[in-house]
Length: 164
Image (cartoon, rainbow, N blue to C red; front, side, top):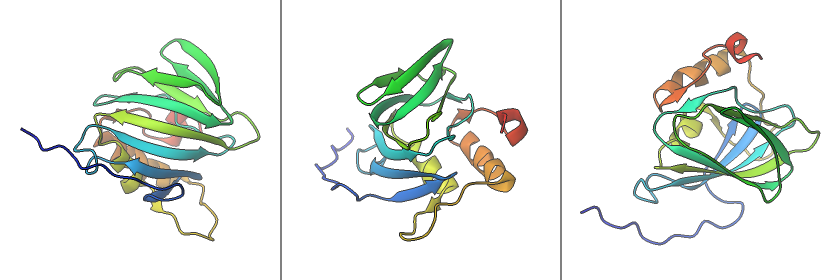
């Protein structure tokens, strides 16, 4: 029998924070802290940002929009998701999102089972307060696409395939 994880509290503004292609991801619950049950990330998605169409083969993904707006494509459906909206994407379902507005969107990403948070931590850069968040170029995108495959992510491998 797997032992239960202990209760924990991550205060606002705390948790391991990663810069990822101009965006910010803070891990609130991880594989280690939940014994693999769930991972939760708080994110800030800049205008014009969002991943290309992709599939997660190992986990379900859910999004809760805290502020701003993101445009989602999930399978054959389009959604203009705004603050208070929740979206669920079962594993194996093609999806993407984009911030097509002029304001940052703040969201919660949920993965079950846990594990995909490690992709952001490995492919991104540790955030450094006071420095500007770097936007990625070709080399960083290619590196992230290579790392993503180790976490069950299927999607474009180059910026050209991604339409960037």
